[in-house]
Each structure stands twice: as structure tokens, then as C-alpha cells.
Image (cartoon, rainbow, N blue to C red; front, side, top):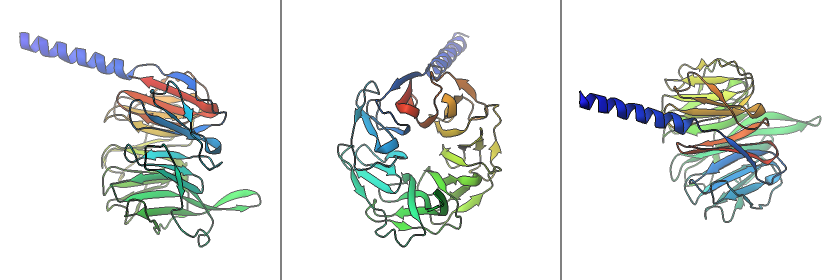
Length: 325
């Protein structure tokens, strides 16, 4: 009986700790940037990066208490920051790509393709991921300016097999804009894009299969926990989840109509979504239901980075909101 009571007490204590960890409130701050912040990435609890409009890039070494701007040679908006380890990172900035091999102390521009003139439009890079030391992907789209407006002419998927030294274009039979990709291991990966597009690979990106998303809304972000459980978010409150690798995607109804731009799970159960009007949603049941959290801001939030112990979201006018768990 004593052992049973002790076990129950331990269970309750653990549950209370779990609740307190994931129920902390968000706090808002500024980095000094007047433009919008689009992406955020942390390589440790203290070291992180934010980036956005007009090539703005800043880093922190004290867990986001202070930020120091790092100037790079571009005025294009930085769409994504991605580090494959502590030292090697990438910046995706429109038609430009930058990489670091010294933990961000210096950034060097590189061209994934030697000749852009052979493409059916100007490249717009949006996301990069590596699935090992050698293999990686860059995705985005090609566009032309017609009548003063940018028109998407084709999708763009590049692959490297030598650690990023050289890149080759993959043939994808879809001309829609591809916005984000995610891999869970060397074989299984997914890409999302305009018009509800979801593409999946089970062979490391050699072949991509169209999945039925059940929506025609643009999908902006995708996050998989393993080869089965995944989540995608997009325009007009779109939230999708799957438990079988995307064979079936189900829509999650929340009653929140705002456009969602990022989804990130800290563990198998606890996930967050950020989007327009300062919206932050949290789930503690594998994405089946979502509740709204107080973000301390009403500006649009574009970027999100979450771990079990801390999280950061970034948005308009240099806004950073953070939570320490």
C-alpha cells in the first residue's frame, strides 16, 4: 500500500512539473531591427540567431537577453536560418545563399547553381535541410516579373551529396511554389507549398509522391516527429495532422481563423503554432486540440524555435517573444 501511495505521489508530482514547464507565459522584447523578423534558430540555450527583412541578422550569447547585429552582403530578406551542427549553418536569402563553418563568426555567399540563366526564371530560395553529413536539400521556386508582379514559373528543388560543395536540380513534376521541407531520417521527408501541396519521399529524396492534403490553402510549414506523426499549417487557420506518414491527413478544427506560419513540437505530445495577430497556440495531446496562449503582442509572428526548456518566436518590427520552461 505504501509503495502504491508513493507511486501515485510521484506521478502527481511529475504531472505538476510537466504542467508548470509548459504553462509558462511568454514575454515580448525587441532586437533593434525596424523590419520584420522572419526566422529564428538556436544552437544552444544561450546561443541563437534571428533574421529577416533587408538582410538583417543578429545573434545572442545570453539566451536572448541582448542581441548583436551581424552584417552580411545582402539587402534581400533572409527567409530561413538553419544549422546542421554547432559550426555549420546556412542563411536562405531570396536568390542568395550564405553559409558559415565557424559558428556564425563569418558568413560567405555561395551559388548552389553556377548558371541561373538556364533556369525558367529567377530563383527564390526558401528552405534548406541536411539529412546527414553529405546529403542536403534547398527548395523554393522560380519567378518572373510580369506587369510589375512576380509570377511563379516553376518549383525548385536542389540536392547535394557532398556536404554542400556542389548542388544539382531535381526534377519535380509540380510547378507550384515549394515553401518548406522536413526530414526525420535519411529516407523519410516531406515538402509543403502553395495550393495545399504536400510531397513525400521514402528514399532520401530520389522520388517524391504527391499526398492528398484535403485543402487548397497554401501550406507554409511542416514538422514531423517520426516517419508517422506529422503536422502542417497554413493560411486561414489551416492545421493538418497525420498518424501514418501522410497517407491520410486530417484537418484540425480550432475556431482560430488566423493564418499560421510555423509549427514546432518540443516532444511527442507538446507542440506550438505561431501566426498572424500575435497568435500562439499550444497542444499537449499530439496536436488533436489546441489552446491559445498569451503572446504579449498583437503583431504577426513569422518564425518559431521550440525545445523542451525554452522557446522563441519572432515577427513584425523586430519583435521577439520568448518562454523559459
